[in-house]
Image (cartoon, rainbow, N blue to C red; front, side, top):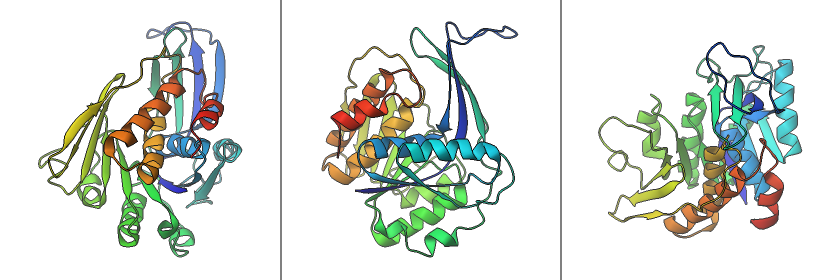
Length: 286
C-alpha cells in the first residue's frame, strides 16, 4: 500500500515537564526530544509504522535544521520529497512543553504560509500521485495541496483532508476532497462541507466519540478507547495518518474511524514523539 502525504514539516523541540510554566516562570525539563513534526509529517510516520509505503511531499530546504527533520523521517521509514531543496531559510520550528502527569501540552509554532516550493516538476512530472492508494493533505502549503488534489482526482485516488482549522485554500480544495476529517474546533463559512462537495465528513473531539456523516444522509459515531494518556502531542496527526491507511483498506466509514481511534489511543500511552511507533507496527501491520 502506498500513502502519499503533502504538507507541513517542522522541527519540534519537545520538553517534558512536571508542570507547564506560568508566564515569566522558568522550569527544568525531565526529558528533551527533537523530531520532525507537522500534521502531514506525523501522519506519514504513522502510515510507515503501519506498514505502508509513505511518501511525504514538503518543503525542507538546505538549512542545517532541515537535516534533523530529514534524518528523523528517514529513520522511521518515510520517503521525503523536498520540493525546494535549495530553500535557504530554516524550516518552521515548534517549541513544545508536555506535562508529565497527564500528557497535556502547549505548543508555540510558526506555520509555512510564507514558504514556497520551487521544484514541483521533479515529482509531478513523474506522475507520482497516480501511483498512490490514498492521498492525505493538511493544507499548510496551499499551492502544493491544490496541485496534489487535482492530480489525485484525475487519477481516481481518494483524498483525505486533515481539516484542523479553516484556511483560505479550502474554498478551492474542498470540492476535490473525498474525506474531510475535522477537529471539534473547525468552523467553515457557509455552505457546509457536504454542500461544498465533500462526500464524507468526520469530526473528532479528543477522547469523546468521533462523529461522521455522508452526503447521502447517513451518520453515526464511534467511541474512542479509554486509555491512560501519557503524551497527547501529535495524537490527532497520528489519528489522521491511521485514517488514511484505513481509507485504502477498510470498506465502511465506521471501520475506518474505529481503526484510527485504536491507533491514536495506542499513541497517547507512550511518552515521546516516536516511542509509540514500535507498538503500532507490532499490533497493526497492514
